[in-house]
Amino acid sequence: MKKIIFLLITLILISCNSNSQIHLEIVTKKTNKPLKMVFDKFGKDSTYLYLCFPKTIIYDNKTDALHLVERYSVDRHHSGRNLRDYRLYRFRDSLIYPKKFKIPPYQKDSFNIYYGYLLKIDNLILNNLLDKSLSPQSKGENKVYDIPINTAIKKWAISKIKDSIKGKIHFKLHNKEKGFFYKSLDIELFED
Image (cartoon, rainbow, N blue to C red; front, side):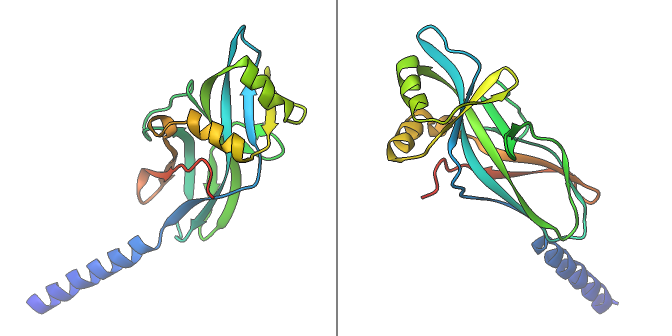
């Protein structure tokens, strides 16, 4: 009888370990898209804007479970949402607000995002940056400017985004087995 119980416990533990190794992976990948600046109007001496960084998100569902991505955002902690200091957009031909989506079983796919930080920029610096940009796109009342990435822009952007405000990209997911759970990705502003 003890041998049967021991075998049952061993089988349960082995099956739990094999299931825990097959899971949903979410990773980031470098992209060659430009930075984006999003703001509505110039201030008197300085302007508040969102400096947005591009990233490709790759997900790989290695399970037979359907996952629902309830929310994804950038912040310092997964349970809070600071919509004033942080922004996250999906990107197809323009910036769009993120929406819920499903990850079917055994599907691997990717999508592009821009995540941004609220900054106060002196108008002289802002005008210098915008001189190098292409004509703006519109997003509601906001203008969206593409800023080509070069060494000087990288150095400037890194000086503006300190580690204390960098945060993580958080995904709030749901499936029938686990209920709600989170996956968080570290942020590297530039991966090179």
